[in-house]
Length: 316
Image (cartoon, rainbow, N blue to C red; front, side):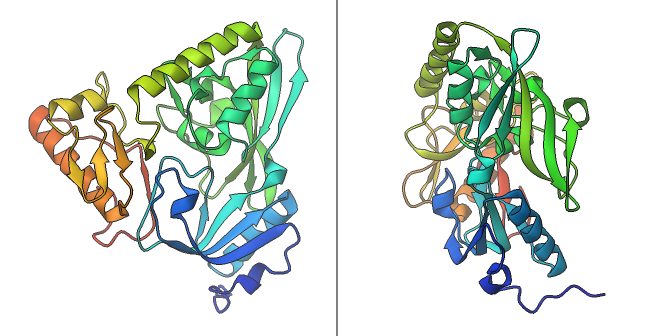
């Protein structure tokens, strides 16, 4: 049977879904750390697993494109916005639960909508170490898992025991070994929506954890433009190299396109100086890639995710 497409643009399609709120024509810029992006046809917030399951099923049935929008970091949304549904996980997916284990550490179960900052604070208060790599990292735990977020202190994938996903209308757990964690990468099944994670952490003194967290945050503040709107690191580090150093060596620090600028503080950040468009950012990305390739013979690969309709087509 062909998909039902008639109600695709209507928020009424989800009006009777308990535990879900629907808004039409919502600008996505304010929902991202870049503060850039056109509207979503619909923004749906699912507060419960039952609501999430039903929303996903109706999107499938009516052939509606579905974008899962977490904390909005590491994302550039097209100026044209996105078709279909931008889905956000609500309060029912924002929690941290501790389950002490026999080794003196603990397993934390964390909802995918929980912010990285909240998760780290709760772990530190409980005297649980292993998440210090999230210090100063914006966004949600779900997004951190998809990108295997991290820094000098390591990557979140190393702390994962298993991840709970919603796939084909049912929940299931995926062990860390099957999640395919790599450098800024994971391999969750296509179409699966992350809803929770179990993190296996080790015991340590809260004051010791706190000192490590403060040191990591201070380092980020000193070296990254945290006071400006950005999506975090734009490019992945090539093997054995640092993208920021390559970009700086190619003379790109301070380079501008419209309201987008390569940060003077850290060259692997593009910042929104106030009125940047997605088109500005994309032109700047392409120019940085061109200059680094010409200078160092290195093709920089995006860490940033492009979402929506970019007129000239595809990722650079």
